[in-house]
Image (tube, rainbow, N blue to C red):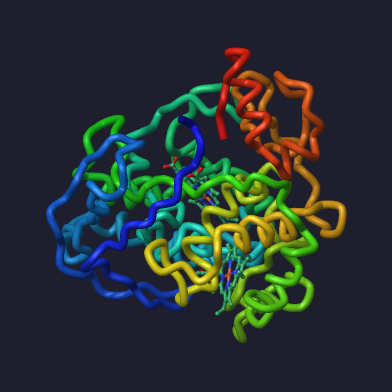
Length: 339
Ligand code: HEC
Ligand code: HEC
């Protein structure tokens, strides 16, 4: 079955880090690592444990790893619109705003296994991309920026940090916790109106009355990053897809008050608020800067908001659901099923 299934098992001994958006905590003791297939049942698996930051070597390579981690945490400071080193980014978001805790939080778009899985085929470009190309993807959108030079110190540092993080992961393997949390798809269409009520109750206090977030006092990056508006991520960013955003929100938001094993929202609330956040009929976003989006419709994700698709369901249903009829139709007709 390709339906998303809810993980209901609580994990004991999971370490939850409490961090500020531009800071990173000290390492915690390691547990034995588990390498699992992507669809392994959560109950049998242990969350992947990353290496201890104390093991970053004290040599040139170690210095690059540290700089890379610093760039992920303080991206805007270094390469933002007023960056100290360069001005690559078009907005003041940091990588860690979405890749939480410098890309080390389970089910929070982490980099546990990233370095072990590239180069790989990417459907958005319909091409094989290296990890550095993939980093530039996120710089182009969500950050609305200009790609880093592949041989720049900053790119080498970010990739070095990712290599260090993935050092124990065998080539081409996924590890538990590295993918978005699998949550049950709703039977109905997601509902931006209900999502607005969830937003007002659970999100607005930090992300603002109009999703604009809150800039940190020093104006370098956000205390609470924007969820929509011209300073937030673009259409075509993965966060703009309702299923992906819902899985992230369910496992991680409200920030620091929820985790995949202690979510604060129900799955339905997460879907509805993701629909509200990503509803372009009511919220503005920066224009797509001309980047390619899924030229091969066979590998276009099912919840992408703009056709054409291999089926004739309307664009709005692809974006907001209900997705199950699309899935069933595709399975019956031997068409690709992919989120
Ligand atoms: C607005 C949110 C957001 C921001 C900001 C962001 N990303 Fe991403 N990034 C994503 C999402 C969503 C994905 C897709 C994750 C998935 O599908 O599992 C992703 C994927 C990636 C991947 C691929 C990971 C893998 O294992 O396949 C890399 C590498 C990456 N981002 C690097 C960066 C870097 C470096 C920055 C900062 C310069 C950054 N991202 C900023 C949301 C963001
Ligand atoms: C207690 C404050 C707080 C609350 C409440 C909160 N968030 Fe967040 N949110 C944050 C912070 C801080 C980050 C960035 C985390 C970091 O950089 O470490 C974030 C990041 C995000 C991101 C990724 C970055 C971006 O700007 O796109 C999304 C999406 C998001 N929150 C959605 C939500 C939704 C939806 C809710 C309500 C269900 C919510 N948040 C509630 C503080 C909060």
